[in-house]
Image (cartoon, rainbow, N blue to C red; front, side, top):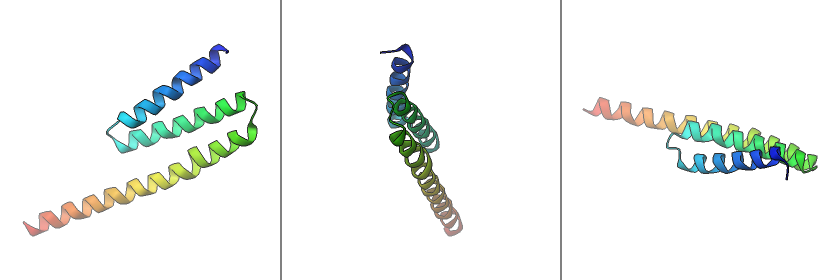
Length: 89
């Protein structure tokens, strides 16, 4: 195994563990995107460009956008609940 492949494998492990252990959802999402990008690079190194394109498009693209939208909606719901609670006091 090449040194680059071992380095990327280590980055994948670190990104996976950090994504699970991070308490801030936005930071976790950014690390998840980095994981997907690194994984697509690994697929290119393994000479599987079709999987690399799919990983980049779905993993780092579509999934991340959907998670960003979900995170935004969750923050809006929390803010609305806090505002209603303040108004009730």
